[in-house]
Image (cartoon, rainbow, N blue to C red):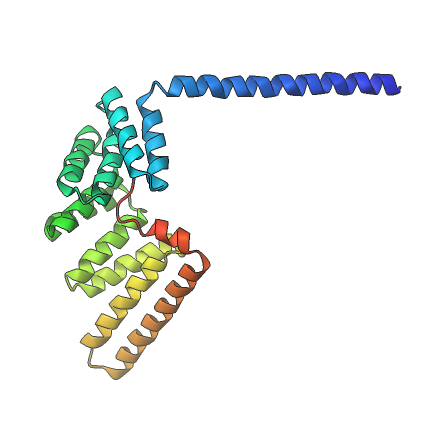
Length: 231
């Protein structure tokens, strides 16, 4: 009986080893195949971008575009690196190319808005964000970017509405609570009714405290959320 059990366990181990070797070979073959694809370099570039290795990320995006000049995602991601480097003309050129290839992606219009914002082209920025949200109605980053723009244009009600929508979609966004708190403070200064003024200030205080707590609980997660452009 013991011998039968030992033989069974040996066969089971052999089968398991065989399965592991098959899985390993599959991943090796997949890696070899993907390294010849434009998408592989885009994915690796995004990983390096997130890691802060922007030089290597840029090399990967260049390779992705060389292998497939119709890779809209690579153009968009390369634009993000240019944006971080302050090369806004290059970023806008790449984003426009991404949109030309694939005009259905809300993320591209959000990123175009980010560059227009840096140029001080607020009207064009707003138009791009409107398109982004039309294409992607649940895009939190676009709501927050538009809220920031409305705030700078002193349209505090509109900014507050976008912040509230962002919170509905992502209740853990410290940026959304923080910005909404700023909106409440500005609105409090505009009203003459003492009761309403007090209500706005109380809401502002609550939102500020919520934002501070969220940052305290997850500082790195909040930092990632606050990227103005996406890739």
